[in-house]
Image 1 (cartoon, rainbow, N blue to C red):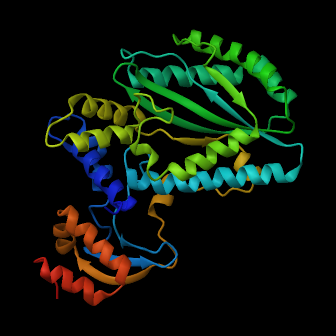
Image 2: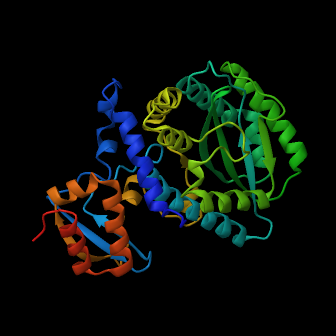
Image 3: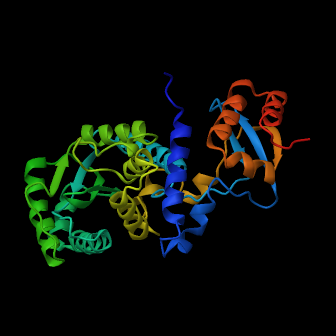
Length: 356
């Protein structure tokens, strides 16, 4: 049996995500209005274009709202994360290309947690601990000693029924020399544990880890390879922790039954991450490394420069087509394979969609 196109898998999960957050029993559904329009509502006027991009070898709809929500939307998340990974790869290449002595270290920060902890509280306390950690005079002196110039932070969240929420950070440290990693990790770990304790969080020997440049390259490469589908799986270590998009996949697979614990967990996650950034750079680092600053929303809205319009659909036709998951993706498949407006029109007529 042929593998489902990744775009179809992501779009199926987008529908689940929108269903979870639009359900009448969710009191705060109104704050997600833009996200609920993603992929469903056109901009400006009522016509929707079906386009083909030779560089991507695929078809897509144009003039459609894109939410730019990396946390909730599998479609926008894949698009944004792919660009962010390319930015990180370019940053590493540019920095190590300046001098053979320059290094990029991989710092991982986490802390203990339990199923009783709310994600919002964990995130607030972790952010306060981070601020205290980075501002600590001894941490600043340690970083100065290794020629630290800036960092890129990636924020990830997993969930387990037995262990609760696990928010953690992977941070690339750009430095002018390669330090003694064992000694550096031991010293930084003590300051991280101290910062955690100040805000009712607990650290241990696993709460801070630091590795050399090969690990930084491996992390970015792995993230780049996984952005399309990794978030549909369990956490990378294979444990009973799930990424948020894996929760959506569980909900999808349980239908028509309702997997209540996963639904409630995803809603809690949606509220806690609203307005937050997944990737962040320290001030001045993008300019130093020649990276242009582009917002998540701009990335989500960007279409391939070589896009060619194959056909224009009235909104009511698009709306009806969008309501039928199989027809919607079969239509995209025909557009990708044939690029033939006549074949597209024939498909719509055969399906009972009104076209001229």
